[in-house]
Image 1 (cartoon, rainbow, N blue to C red):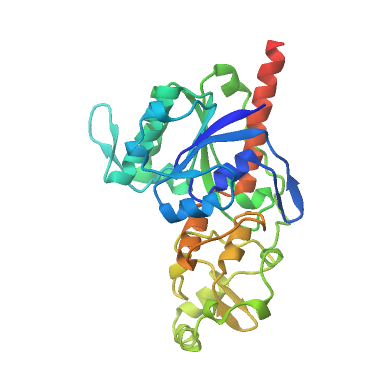
Image 2: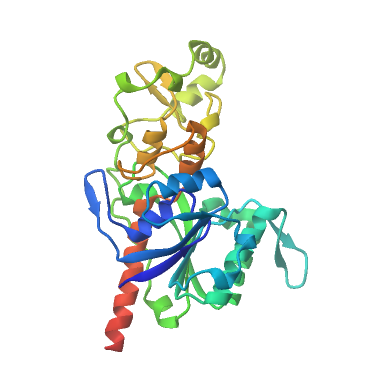
Amino acid sequence: MNLKVASLFSGLGGMDLGITGGFEYLGKNYPSNDIEISLAMDFDKATCQIYNENFNHQCLHKDVTKLNAEDIPPHDVLLGGFPCQSFSVLAQNPPRLGYKDDRGKLFFEMCRILKYHKPRFFVAENVKGLLSANKKKAFPLIIKEFENAGYSVKFKVLNSVNFGVPQKRERVFIVGFKYAKDFENFKFPEPIMTDNFVALNSVLDAEDTIAEKYYFTEKAVAGLKATKNFKLMNKGRAQDVNGPSNTVSAHLSKVSLNSTDPVLCLNDRYRMYTPREVARIQSFPERFKLTGSKTLNYKALGNAVSPVVMWHLTQELKKVISLHNTEND
């Protein structure tokens, strides 16, 4: 197959690992997809360093807004998970998509590169909240911009927990197609499990190996128990280790007993996840190296795409290509 991929906003490489394949997770093999990353880039230098510890190619530390489209190598697939917090809807006739700050520009950079290179596919990933952003007005305009770039578009919310990952993580995947036949033939991956989900305890370290810095102080716990939030805590944010975790986010480095991020209560002690546990919850293989500070790891992992989910989506893209090749024989 030997497809080539250009990856924008690569982060530590969850999307890239998923589309290339060739890794193991929880005893299951996710074979190589015979796909090559021709470009990977991210504006955060420390995150690029994590990426570069784990791939044979390099992730460039670069701002996409300063990248000339002609300098991007030829590619068949463009990947990108653009920020969604910064969109605005301009009150024009018809309404037009705008942005509140520089983060909002990144989506338009992706469209700029699509128009120049015209790859066969693109895949974008974002939080489920993108569908309801700006009172549900922004998403249709986002799709319209992709269509204006020359693509037919399909989108669907996929939940990591349905693909053998011990995390309830809903993300919207947007797939664009240059060719009508590819658009017609593509289907999003079906869940491989709808119950009996992979349990959180399958990816947790033994408690006697956890460093003291990951535990909340007795004072913090006593303060929580004195508030009306204590019962809520036990029902929600303190995770049931016999089921999947709630969504891990980039805020885990700032998690507290009053935050909405998941924590653990084991042996009557509250603690946060370790970075390695978060990597497993996100479906990164055990061999994936984490470098830099704990804060950096939490942020990069919380922003990442689950590699296993991306691998399953890639199998559907491969089916489309196989159908195309068969029809042309």
